[in-house]
Image 1 (cartoon, helix red, strand yellow):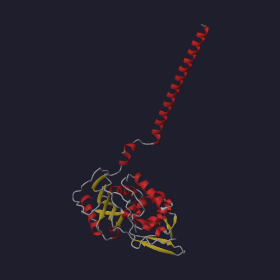
Image 2 (image 1 turned 90 degrees about the horizontal axis):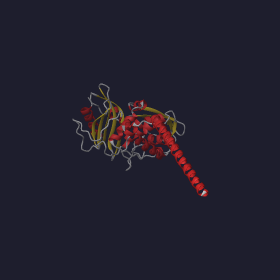
Image 3 (image 1 turned 120 degrees about the vertical axis):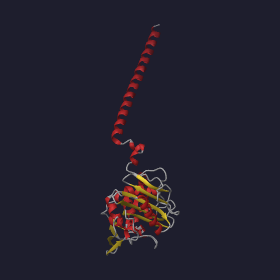
Image 4 (image 1 turned 30 degrees about the vertical axis):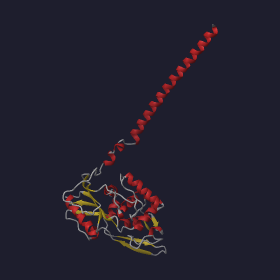
Amino acid sequence: MQRRRRRQAQKAAILIAIVILIGAGALGGFFLWESSQNYTLSYEKTAYNKALYQGEMFAQDLCVTSEEVALDGFEPDSELHAAGLFDLSKDQVLCGYKIFDQVYPASTTKTLTAYLALKYGNLDDTVTVSEHATDFGWDSSVAGLKPGDTLTLYDLLCGLMIRSGNDCATAIAEHISGSEEAFVDLMNTEAVALGATGTHFANPHGLHEDDHYTTAYDLYLIFNESIKDQLFMDIISMDSYSAEITGADGTVRTETWKPTNYYASGNAIAPDNVRVIGGKTGTENLAGNCLILYDENTDGNPFISVIMGAPDKTTLYEEMNQLFTAGIV
């Protein structure tokens, strides 16, 4: 009888101990949960803006549309690949002709190359031009660089955007990232970060490759971010630039580069109500003739205009002027 009572007492003690342990565990879990919630709340308040997850930050200060936008008075040439006009003061897409179609960008690619040089480079750096950076055909757009040449990163940036030098693009890529391949990876990462999700680049200069493409809208996004840097604006508005280059043998020569943009060279005239500040050209067999520009109306209000894939230079500038006349007032 006494043994039975002792066994019952032992069972009761064990049961009470189990209940106490379970209760303590639950209470501890509650405090841990509450602590984690407080930590998470504190982190959310200090470490990120929830608007980033709602798409609001991306849309701020951008011209946004989900579909094509027709512009009265602009009848695009049937051979154009795309066209767009963006009112930066009103954050409005005034014209969006095939702006989400994938197109070959030719040398308008160099806008992103310039953006990355300004973002990651020291423009006072002295750069030595590699053999690879000068390995282009006779008919390629180059700035006249030779293996072993030394010049500043700023010089290369001017040769890139004014003369549209493929050699400058490659030299910049190798200097910024160590290799052209690594720089291309950076280009694609940065393009996505800018919202240019319809873009994939395979080189820093824009020579044709099947997997090297963008959209007119993505180009707007890249160009729009680039013009926030005053140095970029200063360079695209130049009417010429002279670089002092030291050759591999130590001799110094001067290369003077003139713009490929016909508005800057005087070979094309914009309508009276439009002031063209500058931009980037692109020409290649499959890409056609391309041009993206920063413009202003007579009140100084800013616009970005883009024509992609015109069949020839005459059509390119006629279409751009038609876009100006129809949309910039």
